[in-house]
Length: 403
Image 1 (tube, helix red, strand yellow):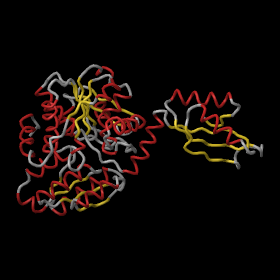
Image 2 (tube, helix red, strand yellow):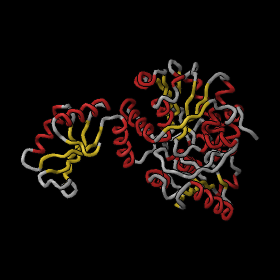
Image 3 (cartoon, one colour):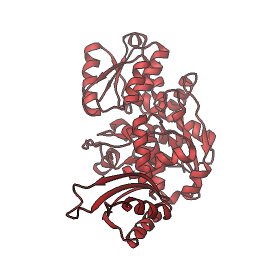
Image 4 (cartoon, helix red, strand yellow):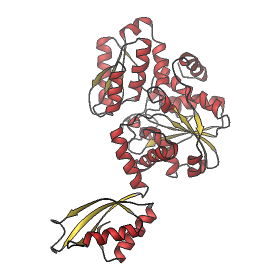
């Protein structure tokens, strides 16, 4: 039975007492940055930090009583697992989740805390899915697919109903694409209510399974690759989700890791909001200049999750600073005699940069025993400041070894 506006509205009624109606707030700083009138649909404020609760609760509530007692199983890289674990606990339905070994640690530990049985298996989603299928048959558990089940797609579509009430004159919704369950649900609901609205999907260029499906006319397997947007790391888009979405989604773009890192940084700095890579992808597309036709339009960004591992967040922020030209590293040759390092420090300071770290390399600095390579990490304002700093260093007599 296809997912329709009616089934999405039924899902909204069904899950109303267990899922938060999240804010959809206008962002002045992101609007200034992108040239569009930007609103952020903050589904990272759900109890488990992502939109996946919508579909999970909708699917669990439609199980027959006998199946509720036996329980459910799913393969998930994290957020679907969290949604199932939390609502399974609330509804007293046993939940087993098979996760790849690469799943973020924060999502594994949180799932366990919420009462789910966690099985770590394989290095990617495909391997975890195969194991979950085997256990479902063996233990008579209902398999709940994270993005290709009709009940899941209908549940995710409830986000669109909220968006259209919160921003009635919205021109476009920009959402990330992993398995395509979210964008399928959004497109079905939004296009039926507001036919002229634009639905735009964003994938990581490292895991663009939806784009691959568009090119072939059907879902195809792509090689798994690492990405900051682990929630989008799906090797094959869902066939059911793709069938629902392909004629309703107006545009799909891909973004590189650099822009995803920068978008995470922008959310933290400008919106004081912690997001995971998948949730940052829509903003990343705008920052990368992929959606310039949305300037002066009312645009809702689906901020779909905030479950980023804290240890990863610190590294991502540093990568974002590098991409922004606010952190740079270079190596120069300096005198190893007294005063050599002081002279370098003075030039950097006068250029308005701040030294974060300096490491000396004497063994590989060449035949001149009176010289040493100094590898410097410095804080700068932007890329223009980095270029200006390097020009000043060259004019001051320092030789840049590695630019």
